[in-house]
Length: 124
Image 1 (tube, helix red, strand yellow):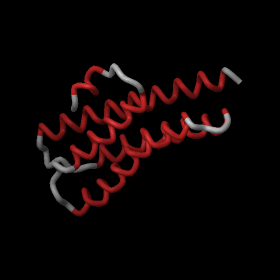
Image 2 (image 1 turned 30 degrees about the vertical axis):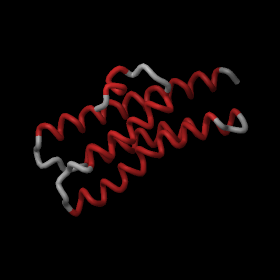
Image 3 (image 1 turned 45 degrees about the vertical axis):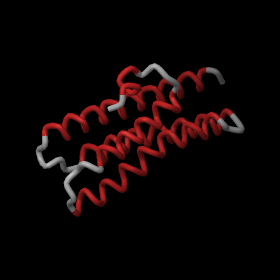
């Protein structure tokens, strides 16, 4: 993990970018198995989609569009967590530790997007 991710002292666009980049760094170290090949494709897509949809939310044309994009970011965070859990680390403790940190970050992002969604729905 980068120092920026550990401190979490920056905006959410940067945090989601760092998350997607950290996922990509992590999957490069995984054993090359048939299952991992398929699951890596999925986790790379969903981790990138978290931030991409958040950026889209910030450029939303309406409050409804904003809430939809935030919902998608939350959903993609949850999906990323799922795919991370499926990846085979071959019982490598270092890889398992990195995966656990990424799972924790995806969980935190899910909670952040959930809070944004809740707050935006109250503002209606």
